[in-house]
Image (cartoon, one colour):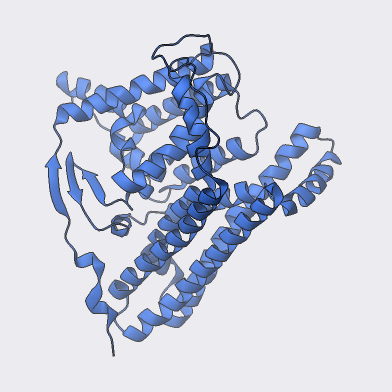
Length: 416
């Protein structure tokens, strides 16, 4: 019988490409702090509209979409540019220079909390993006950015810079998960070349790791679903339901959107849970153990969903950076001579966008199957158990694929 066990990709070693000097790492952190300051200042002092202020495009397009797409190909770049991490590390270095070793104020990070704060952050950001009516308010985004940075600095002081970044900072966790799929691995100021996808195998299965991925896949699913015919029919009825409790139009709209977002996050969790229950019954392993072993297989799916849904936003709306960098406040400046740049909405055809979306969805699920196969070979001692487990994970992957394609077709029909 043909034994797949002899063909594990995980046996391919990573190859060291180069070492990065410490000064460059600190310079990247300084750049990150500078960009953060510019975006916040633009949000607070610039024109308060989406099209002429740098902040909304920087947050929703470049930060939320551009960074993870880049990370999937070149690794977790956000880590070195992370502005709050850079500030915290600078404070720690100054503390050491004064002859005192910085210690976490609250001691060890609680293991039971794990990555649940990161999951909560991502759900909150999704709610802001998908539900809150004033999401494009530049001043609001700037204030929220300052609040979030302050919370991150407090968390790093309480539990340590690297521990907090890897567990509780929702954006750092998100970008690092996607970066684990890249063929480039940035670690300890060393750049290594590795097989694509397999970096996800090294994600530590802490408590809340699955919740992070449920939040990512579920929120993206709801974003697509909310632009389809079914939500257009159901949403108004939900709003009417909440209006009966005395809520105004905005409050009813927010409650309906919150229900929709929660439903899709829960549905993603339920599909994955069904797969785990099937695996547990077939292999006589616990659901908790299997979840820890296979949760990383959701990372390519999360990226595929994100790429399919946001690719057109990045290609089209991302062009606005061309004029926004020259006039970030919308006051008529022309710092780099590009203030007259115009967005070309014909840059890419709808057919090309459609093909990218299909490839992203299918590719993400193929990546999940590859990772599932790799982990199955390492986890199960018998070939029969490995095959049975893969059958259940294949059911999960097919379910996610069909769900994504259905949402995509529904959106296309509604907008067509």
